[in-house]
Image 1 (cartoon, rainbow, N blue to C red):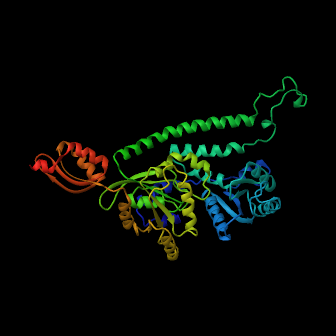
Image 2: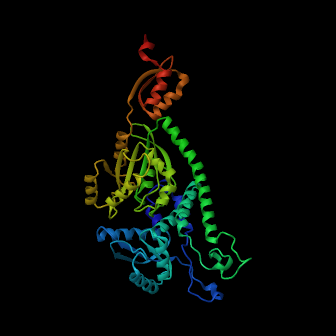
Image 3: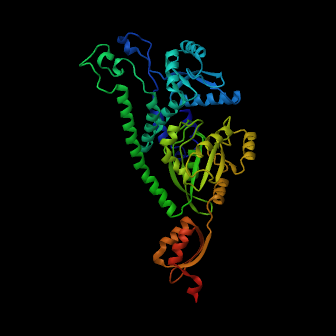
Length: 474
């Protein structure tokens, strides 16, 4: 309820209040456990969230960097619905290839798990299948890594059909090399003397259970890729239509929880869900907006980024991230109140560099949450980032200046026309109002005298249909 009161000063459309209420009405329970050995006492079991211990390996950078990384892992774990009991950092040159933290530290971790009553260990890195298995064998509770945690959050928050398919594909890509089995049900093939004398009639079916699972996962991944490819066609069609009509496109990119959806709501009134949580919104939203001069453009909210964003997600969400690559301008939103905003900027740019067509695009760094940020930090970022502006999507401060800056950075209207357009082509006059800058309109007997600045595509259509004003007057 606290967060709902916190946003009560804003209009309902600014927070996606209905989505927020729906999400908070029934929270996912991350894990169930019981210490009872007698199943007859099952009615007395307690329902509770997973209790987790966090573990990080500090290989480079400062101690502050390592603590910030573990603090982010804590926020990720809480977003997934866990209760964090303890956080541990170990200084090493590189993670141990066997147990990630070394055999001695793994035993210490087991003691901490037992003393705190934790049922899960979350590691701040991507573990190999071998590291995962050996660490789990040592600490005797479930072990997951940062990648699995982020995938779990994405699975909780995906709403659209395409988003759910993208997340499932990423999860299967992660799971495939980590499949393992226990017991005879998943044993290797048997047959002949090699099977311990089982002989005829005891040979295996030729394919082990684990191989069968791998094959089914690969088949499911192929099916998901076909589905995602088909679903991305409609988005590509809409992008082509906007490009044909030469409506400039702006993409909002940035670190998760930097305030991208809040900024979109403030600029367009989109009503997208706003929540103080990591990866609150995953599905891209495209809305129309106008510059102070009245020029139409589209603005797209994209999925948030994070340090070490799993490559499976980048691959699965490629069709969504194309919104960034096809934009004319990127609004790079950074949380000015975050302990390490420069680290956020670097992490986002690392992902953007992998998106086809995104490198080299004009960028405006939007320093958000100015109402909660340290003025010295804002000043430091502003000096470092040449094209930057300070705003507060929550209070609306700086939004007008941002819209003026967007007007300056959008592709220029480099064709000025003064033409007589027949009345039956009023659609071109309407397009000039929407896509260009109309300087004057005069209605005469034969049509509309239009004086405007427009882009190349509309200029060619107007030239083909309209008549120069000088010829009309003579």
